Image 1: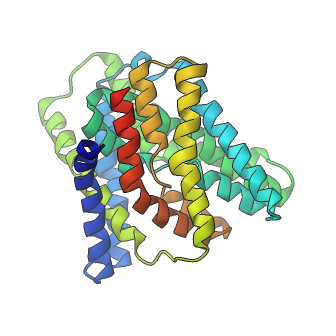
Image 2: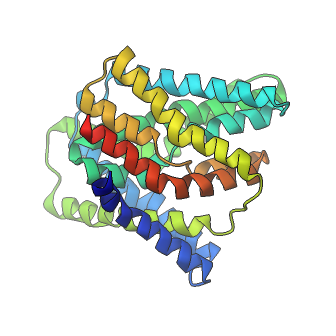
Length: 309
C-alpha cells in the first residue's frame, strides 16, 4: 500500500496546493469558478474526446459491467435512503444523502488519476462509470426531487433531463469521440496535437480546482458527514466488488477499475445540486470535505488491493 500511496500522493498534493492557495486568498472563489469552468468545458472534454476517439463502443460498453455497477450502486442508494428515513429525516434530504453516498468525483479526480495509475486501459471502464453516474443516477436525483415536490414526474421534466444530458460537455465529448473513432480515421496531426495539449491541462487544473473549492466548506454535523464518507469510501467499493467479482463475473481488470472508481470521494457537483434545490447543502459540503481528506488513505488502499488481486 505504501508504494501506491506514494503514487497517489502527488495527485492529492496538487489538491492540497489548491486548498492552500484559496485559503491564503491567492485564489478567490471567482477564480476557482472560472478554473472549474475551463476544466469542465475545455480541458477535461478534450481529454475525454481523446480517450473515446481511440476506443470503439464495443471496447467501452459491457453489459455485465453496467449491471454490476448499476445493481451495487442502486442497492446502496436504496439502503442509504431507507436509513435516512428511519432517522426521521424528510424524504428530500434522504434522496440527497443517498446520492451523496454513491456519487464519486469520477470526472475531475477519477479519470486523470486512475488512467495515470492503472494505465490507458483503465480509460474505458472509467468512462463507463462516469456515463452511468451522469445518465442514470443524476437523472434519478432530479426525478426523485421533482416527484416529491410536485407529486409526479411530467414529460417536461424528462425533456429537461434530456436537454441537460445533451448539453453536458462530458457526455458530448465522449459521444463525439466514439463517433470519430468509428470512422477508423486518424485526426489531422495539428488537431491531434491541439487536443493532446489541451487535454494535458485537465489533470493539474482539475485537481487544483478541487482543492480550491474545499475552502469554506463547513464542519457542521461531522458525525453525519463521517457516516456518508464511510458509505462512499468503504461501502460503495465493497458493494461494487461483490457485484462485479462474484455475481456478474466482470473482467478482472475492468472490475478492479470499477471498484477503484467507486472508492473516490464525494463529487463536488452534488453540492451544486444541493444548493440548487436548497436541500441539505451544508451536510453535503461537509461530506465532500471529509471524504476528500480521508480518500488520501482509502483510495490508495483500494487501488493497492485491486493491483494485488
